[in-house]
Length: 67
Length: 261
Image (cartoon, rainbow over all chains, first blue to last red; front, side):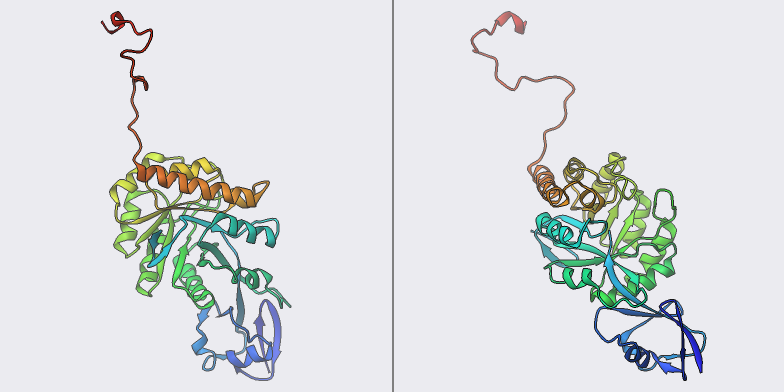
């Protein structure tokens, strides 16, 4: 069992999983978002090879209004 | 029509999308402004957020998106934000903001130049929000920036062009660089002034979004930018210290020859 921060929420996972698997679990499959893992940008092409481990922080970033 | 970052556009007005009373007013303002480029930003997903109506609606508009790096204080933060924006918005354009002071939101020239240097290497078309400092602007150009966006005055202040001399010098010294006045524009007359100086465009947000009628104000800025550009291209008369009659006085009815003596 591991614990991670996902969008500022503490969640538990049975084991380490890839970013892609986490996104599937969280129903986050549409376009127009990006992923930050421990304050680093994870390109879409790395979702299947990047593994999330205990204590990691994952954030989803979305478009918003801006000046 | 004009060219910016390999795009041929009709409008020289770039419009921000923040702080509008409603999403519908924002969309109407964009349409009425005639802007081809609108600025956007990024946010963390809030808990249980499923819908993003802003993006669902705004992506339907036929505009180019210019994502910003708002909120960044260091080069590495801005670089990460730019990478995120490139993936989300599918554009290599980035409005590079690296703020050095919380009071007037003045860009940090050192972190800005550092970020610009790296982002150009990574293939971004960098639109740096900068001060009107000539040496900083020259450094940004050395690093590969083809577009510069010096401020008129602090973001959201509406004070207009505080240092028109500095902006005029930039135009004069950097004739081949695309120059856009960004930040501080409060009234259409400020936009006219920037365009009369020979600037290639004007970027603004608050002056429209905080107007009593943002949609109508967007139209006012559309016309102001057109008027200022037309005046610049038409060639304005030189200012004089003495009066000159606009009507030729010789042979007018009450012209007295002795007045000429």
